[in-house]
Length: 271
Image 1: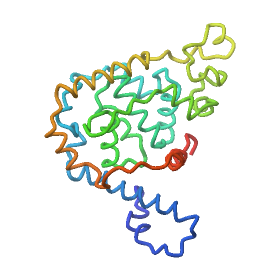
Image 2 (image 1 turned 30 degrees about the horizontal axis):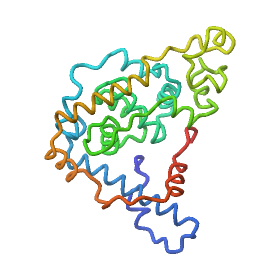
Image 3 (image 1 turned 120 degrees about the horizontal axis):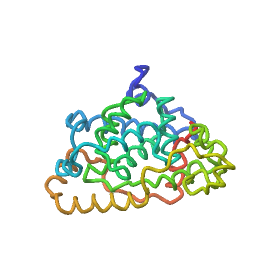
Image 4 (image 1 turned 120 degrees about the vertical axis):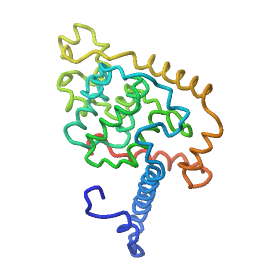
């Protein structure tokens, strides 16, 4: 759709009565994604200012002043010192694409661990995505930065994400040649390697972490929580929910097996 080779109506309007049963679930999932695509685009059409200011207006002042230029630059260049974060950024710069979860992680790390104002990172990513869609991008950027006021905070642990999604370090080694010789047991936390280990496996040229990600995450969670308690009103939260909240109705808990299958359907780092 972003390359003007089709529209959301084309696959949605087709007659799929003859679809094979085993394909029906995939088609239903695809139609659901199309609905969400339109939902997020409508958010920006309803409120174009979302490109420039916080969705929840009372959260606009949570971060004031200019961004830390060094931290922003290190994030932009894939030099944070957290292997998966840097590998994702370098991959994105080269390919123009990244799966959804890693897009969310890049934005969340910038907003929480690095404590950057959301606008600069969001603009950087917008320039890199070949499938950039403003309505989806800016809504997601604000959601991952804790600025909607109606969504739970999503603070990603870059080490746990790395261990879970790239356990053998294959993706990291592809995009961070500085760590090409580091074994899987050490590649997710190369800053913990001893001088002897670095001399043996390499890693001396890879930059040290910009900060302690766990301490930074705790500080960010507290700062956001404190600001929300002091500045958020029910009226503004209600306005955001009425204008931008999902209309799917009450949340229904899915069976654990179904939830796990949904997670497994997330595209891998190599797709």
